Image 1 (cartoon, helix red, strand yellow):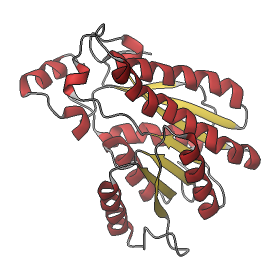
Image 2 (image 1 turned 90 degrees about the vertical axis):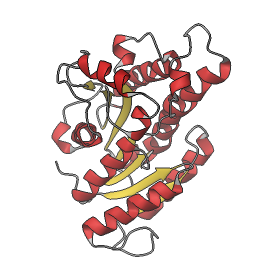
Image 3 (image 1 turned 45 degrees about the vertical axis):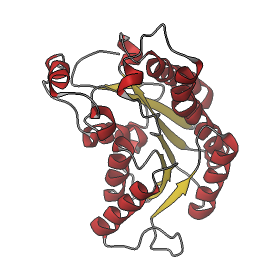
Length: 264
């Protein structure tokens, strides 16, 4: 896919989708900046796994053999994101790809809250991380991508943003806004910078599966034409394709990865 040597920032890299994407990019020889906010242990574990897979030094940013470093920021705060991106550009002398995978971890209780009983905090939490976080990261990387005359951005939405859902309204609103952000900025950033989005269905990450009993999960599976949950690795392959030069004529698109449950 032409990702070898690409300078990539992956936000939310300690989580299931971000982690799988980072591992796939490492296999392809990309130079990686792996973002986290609170889960430094998860990022250190990821760096260790990459080091084991590749047999090269990872993590301290101090030599030419280092192709993966960890970076921290609250993506909801633009000044922190701007400083983080500046450090990535300084380390790698530019940035080719942004994968904005950071998302608010929806709890079971929040998911099943009556959609007409959401308070301000419930509405704000996914909005700040998913939408505002994605926007802040885009805003921070664009000056560097424009300066070099190229760049690719992939955002992460979800199928309820397309089909609607009786549950998870706060989450759905933020993810629907990400689709609007993708389509609007694709027009503003063309022709030199591409931006696309994946809308993920039921992907079997720890965060997605946590707190649900077996009966509920089996009911979900029966609604999926492929009769199984997707894997983080399958989501990562779609993300990396859109980020890569193989998707060089694709921008402003929403690619659904959900086993056939809904259609964009």
